[in-house]
Length: 239
Image 1 (cartoon, one colour):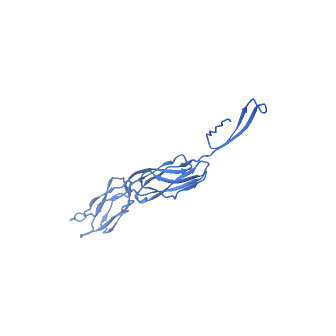
Image 2: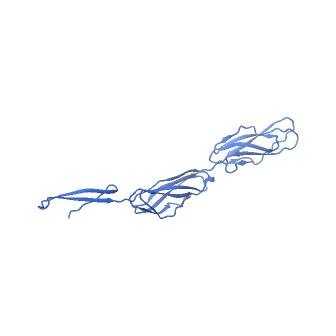
Image 3: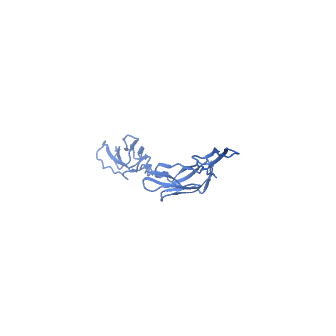
């Protein structure tokens, strides 16, 4: 008996010829065909990044792509995160994945409530396998533009005719993205106007000033409502 070792370096069918030389009188040279096959179970999973999400986009669903890169059917038994992140696997497992086929696994990114970068390891247990496949799932929460300004404006009394009084309105972007002031409108008295150039942008965390002009055409108490139109998520129309 002669031991024969099979150590394939790749999957698939392998063929060889074994030649045995001997002093036997009936066959001094013995030729034996040899064949073997290596099966493989290889699961490939791509990482998932949700990108930058503003609060109004939550919850968001992304998809993890898993591929059976082997020659045997694979059963994905489970997909679990390492900690308790704002991510949730939505797929019902186990699922069988045939060779060369792919599977899209939905993952939900819930609103964590606080701005920042969030990530965790998602581990796939499958059979047959030598160990779990682990990937990174990540996403960033960024607050959208938010506008902050005075709740009301009281212009000092004017005692002279044909006088124009300008008042500065300080607006602040308390969000993480650029705030765009697109236009304004004034209802009520026509003695109020905004001569400031529009549209204009206010960077995250910065402030800017709009000018409110009061040019009364007659005596008496004047009142109106100033509305600012913007991309702010807290108040797209700020009054």
